[in-house]
Length: 532
Image (tube, rainbow, N blue to C red):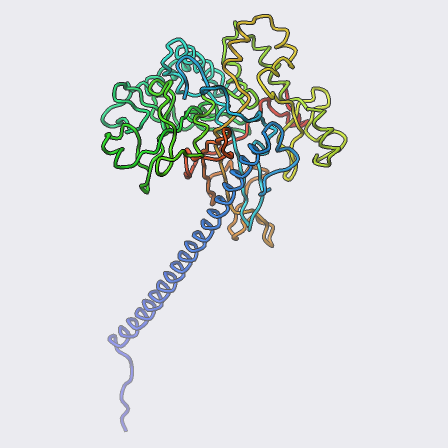
């Protein structure tokens, strides 16, 4: 009996190798498909989570804006001054040749850093960390004064701007020298005068931009980025190596000298070639807000009206307080630059700054007796027991100790150095440039997911994302992460027969720059007291 030879030939061995390769190929394909599905699922999950996060941040930011506006209105109703201490928010035209509006300042009490709105608020809502920073624009130098119809006032304003630019970053590694300050001031003036405009950067059609003048009033301080020599590093606040460096936006403004004009329809604006008003997004009637530089100096016009020609109660007060500087809130470099040091010595201004930063013992006693004081009942935290200077950066949930403030310009006589200063002309000139009231405010809101720790001790935000930081680094000093910053600029109308009202100048805008709270005097990290 014969048996067949079953030995595999070369062809059989080759077929067995092809099967193995096909098996490996199928495994790789399946693995790739599974991996792609996993990545796609993770990406969709991340996108969905981010959308939810952004929606929550958006809601928190909108709520913070509402609370800040409420604080501003409550302050106007209470009369300003020191009405805000001991509480906390619920969330935790320039006339030619002068400053201010007709008939004096709006009928409201002084605004100061003691007010509720002036204290930074930080809290957590639904896993979202919220910071509210409100500052009055009246503390800043208004660039519109560079183009006043009064040539002498415009020239003096230019010199003030040079001094401010020279001093804004004084005593830091980023100081601006005098020659650079003069160049920047000249470039800014030329931009407003219109010589820096061309076909690429044409004039917008605004009521403040008159056809018989090349002067173009800026809509926002961000326009300075179009001025030669100014970039984001110079315009906005920076924290470098733990040192707060103020930007030009913290000392310059274009918003404090506006005037409410009559209602102008879109059709009327179109017929006038955009000379009287600019339609806003979304259509509807436009309220003409005239700036107060050369083109609007001394502008009066008809009484503001509402629908059907009836008087508009919200516009009854007419104008802001103009380009006067708030004596209670102005940064040191602004106050020191209003007059040359040869006319008003720096020592006198330093005495004013020191006085407004010192503890108001009478007010503190009043708060302690009424039970509204926070912190230590014997001597408040952050107050230097020797100089009585107050550190206004306090723990969350506390209010800073009350400081002196000027209820009126006449209160300057409470400062001995000012009272004993002999030059009546310098005093008169300084008093003409300052006020104690504010009516235009910027609300900056920063929201981000709250940070926690997971089971392994790793720092994560409220939505589970790792946020490990080296040491005690300020989270806002590092890039990345989910954060939203929004800003609103409002005009607080108080006076006349109407109730205080807020009119939006900038309705709402997303921001990327960071707003810092910079004290008049640096804080000694060892003692926690201001170092004068």
